[in-house]
Amino acid sequence: MIRFAVVGDIGSGKSHVARQFGYPVFNADNEVSKIYKKNRKFYKKIKKLFPNHRITFPVKKKHILKVILEKPNNIKKIVKIIHPEIQHKMYEFIKKNKRKKYIMLDIPLLLENKLNKKRDILIFIDAQKKEIIKRLKKRKNYNSKIINILKKLQLPLEIKRKKSNFVIKNNFNNDSIKKSVKNLLKQFN
Image (tube, rainbow, N blue to C red; front, side, top):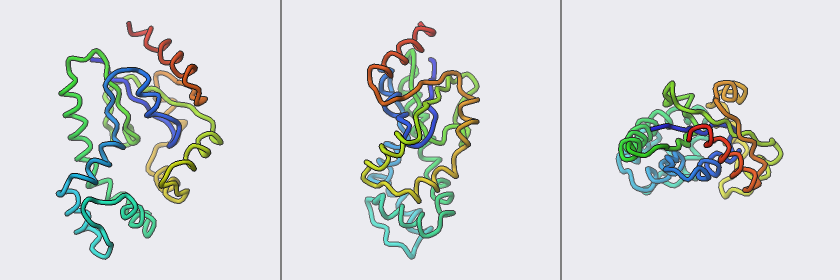
């Protein structure tokens, strides 16, 4: 099995590009949402960690964002709780798809949390800053303060780009992205 992993800036279109490959995708952001909705163990840990906050089950993203905005360092505490859950879900995904030729990993903190293997094929998704900001502002929970806090958890983009095996330029044009993906995959078939 070949593991491809998309890396890049918040809002650069990593998830969209990962889906264009047509192979099973592990999307860490989706898994976090599922944990918020279904995982009582996570809820109990968060409730215990932040007893002064109104956190209910299922956990609402807006409550987590409030905790982070109150004290930006809280995000590290939350990551410490949720990271093992995501790692477990990732291993389940890999095990379930072990017979697949390729899988895609869409994990924003892949490099930061050392979830990648040496032989993983890293694909840096490169997008223009103004396009990213335009797209982020369309998101329901857009908050520039939260985006800046999240960026502080991540490695600088230059480092991610340097560690990557390939770069896909995302100009948010589907035909262009599909062509880039097709050209990249030719090297593995």
